[in-house]
Image (tube, rainbow, N blue to C red; front, side, top):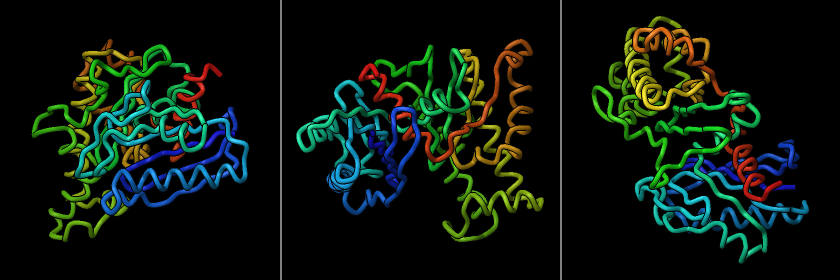
Length: 295
């Protein structure tokens, strides 16, 4: 059995699974990144491993994590201090080896989500695809021939920094930005709505929700067009909380892309929506572990 851990800025999800990706246990706990930073995350993960070892014969630990990652070394290359203080420099492979004598594999969380879709979801059968996760921010990952493209600095796919009309993609195309914009438009205090509320308003024809969702789609379509122009992937896979609203989002995104891409390119670019849900990061972390171990 393997322990899979998905470390996000808000929650740490974990599960025990076999090599086929069948879960025997699931759980989640708050990250408390602001309160305890990287050292607190290390303590929480160590406790998870100890507990799992009491119940299962673990063969390794597969970690998906926020931040820029050096998968070969197993370390955190860069993490925003504003998001997870004192996390940069943590080496998960060393922590797992020294504390538990267990092998570990570590990869960025968006990359893991893409690998989860490659293995069990919307990326299956594609020779190339670009995954976009629209959540608190927006992340991306390019998969070519079954492998994540990391780039020279390990930052390939960091589309939150992409420039689109109006600013960076993070500012124009994130769930957090969408909710804040609708709150402002309706004269509500920031934090008084969530994504579900926005789509409830949208379903009722609310003008503010209609306007802000339309603006998000315009920026998302600009970003997809930029990616397609450079990489020309076989498939675009959209995930994250906003993209769970496939029935609402798919026709709008397709219409926006149809006006941006030439007809041959549009016809050759398949649009898919993520299928593995909350398990994507853990499944991708396991897939990456098995790849590293040659299993």
